[in-house]
Image (cartoon, rainbow, N blue to C red; front, side):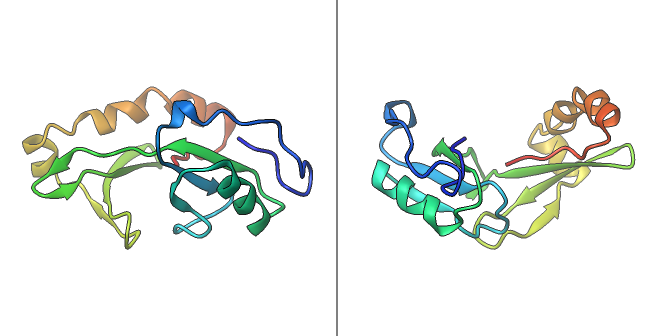
Length: 134
């Protein structure tokens, strides 16, 4: 996580090697893809991005290629609310969610989506904070 430009205009040298040839730059308070830069490949792009929302921290992460399920990228978001886990398909281009049905969960062996959140439930309950995924 990089400090906001307003707090730290000059950053220490960044080793991009672990990120591969291209990576993603995300402002910390963004939503719906606003301010997200896909396919970045240079430190200059990171420095430029930090000036777009200078009060925000920035995350730089490796590009992830999801598994394909029936010619569709298998991106998911899992929500935990009122004691229940709600796995959803997530379309990264439209940012529209659709519930994973019981049939899909069984057919594609997606039960792990529910289990991954169950380990975090005690933490969410003890802090009073909602769980977030990025």
